[in-house]
Image (cartoon, rainbow, N blue to C red; front, side):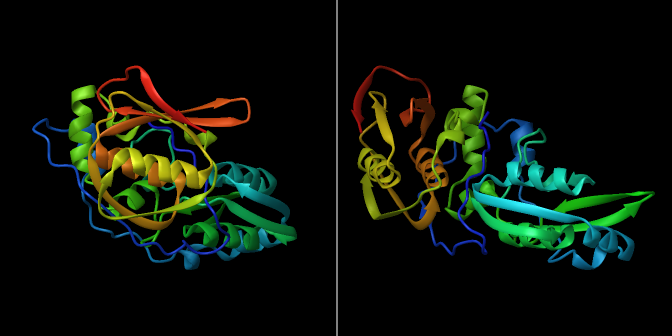
Length: 286
């Protein structure tokens, strides 16, 4: 299964991006029930905001707690753990952030840059959640404060971004049924090694996928290898200011590829192959 690690740029709202990708043709295999549930279209009845839900007692308690936060290119999930540890409160996270029903959070894609000194916990939570486009509210339960992290109507997680790129997620899940896991089509990624670099693609007309791989990896300064199983096919893919992780996932989903990410010393190596199997590598570039 893919490993969601979230590297995003910004301390501001989501960088505007317009993207589209060629959808995979529907496959005859039926997606497993688990994936059907994960990708089932549901009405967006999430709240626009939840600020008014915080109780007066909880707000007052959080105003008294002072927090020092210094983040540079921080992963949102790790940053949240640092923040909540300083606050010392209990917390829960909206199940909407767990599309696969397990421990992998699908938070918005942003690397956090934030520096606050002796700021109230309430103010830091405001800044943190605003930077990610998510919501929070708190309540006082006995002598402790419970902080609730909420997915809002305009929150854009990783799967939301892929859908915005035009990727047919149910079709990917159907393909995954043939290999037993969605990771067969979406990748089998260990994305914690990828940089925060944002990239662009301008293939508004079909372009060879190997050329697309080379272009995206060069923009992010990645070493790459292309397996002999990768076919010489052309795909349409265009976007700008998209995290390299999302860009590569979109390309793999569109071109029926898988990829793995490894670390060798200080170098990050991305290996691409056809989704069904891996064979001898025939190309590599630094």
